[in-house]
Length: 111
Length: 111
Image (tube, rainbow over all chains, first blue to last red; front, side, top):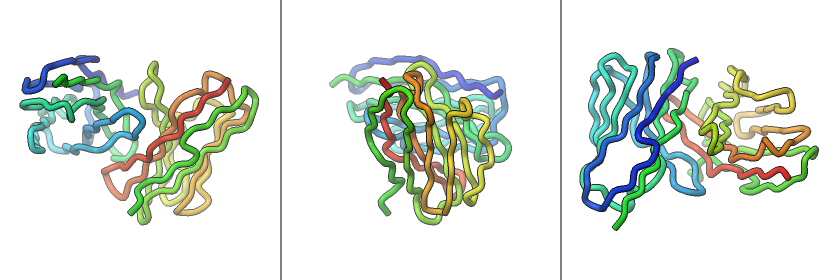
């Protein structure tokens, strides 16, 4: 069974601060995705990383896939209250469609 | 496109009753997923379909749960009989490739 761990579980920061959240596993994934979920809504896909060592940037968000495709990080620069939410990572098996989700990091950005 | 549509958004039922959750995927997507989310267990994949055929139902908790996809535009998740431990938010997601798009979820409360 492939399992994903995320850290920290909770994070509360002030607007303007930088932060990094982590997603780790002992398993290798064919791809890894990051989602953000707001209360009362479904998760929304932020990015998909496929290649080991890959780095993708989405405005103030930087995503990195580990060289061994077992871990990933999400870095947010100058966090804003609109970044508040539950950040979930999900790893896909070799078939690319069976996803395992991590427990999430709940981020709160205070104005 | 309206996105993934789920109904009902909220369902409150008594223990022992049958519950049916409904999902309309995004047109053209050939994968459909059912997930369950709770605070304790996070987001869990229950079952997924490809071209209306169930591919992996290993996440379905027990025989009380069943899912069908009679055509490309409709799927149901049925719980019979329901139990209080089934209380959760149930999400449907669809995909045309690697990216999954989630519906708004159905919040189920079994009393």
